[in-house]
Image (cartoon, rainbow, N blue to C red; front, side):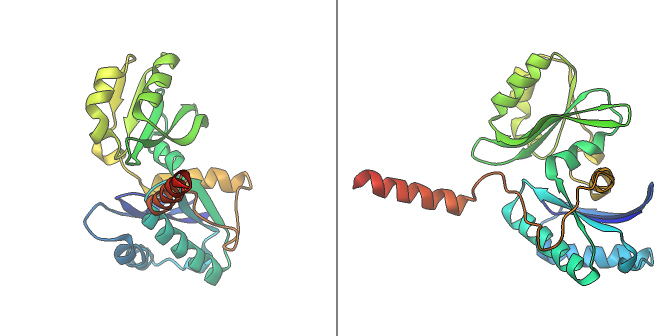
Length: 239
């Protein structure tokens, strides 16, 4: 099985090619360039370096959200275009699940944190039991205090990762009552290789969609939509 995986949901841009259980190539950057500048050149580079014919892919995986609205749109448009041209299915992986899959094999509860601004994080709770990946709490936008309270009630060791760790590190250290760790840098951010392995499980379970069916899952309204709704609500109240 061959999967091309793309993750542009956050600050990191990452692409990978996985064939069966072999990570043939992975290209990950975390720099001050937009994903529209980097994503296709990164795909071109790993295809060229591995002498891969994209027509041999079984599916194309993408982080479907949540995350940056612009990043998700770029990732979605990229894989939709490839899927249409190549006539391949899309595997739309929940972003937070793909992030959690970085820590395959840990016996701790995994808590990814993506900075969602407005004093919220995109988060969920996950656990591995042997090879089995379990979703304890589906991904959702939450206040950092909410997810910490839930972690404390579980009374199990936890490991945190994601770009939401740094802005809330002090609060985590102050409020978490169970043993906890922060993932090291090489495992703490989105990686398309981990996304591809989660996608493989989903593919085998029949969780695929066509290019026409695929769309990002933002989990909440964009800032522009929220501001428009606030203006409309304010106008109604004045009337």
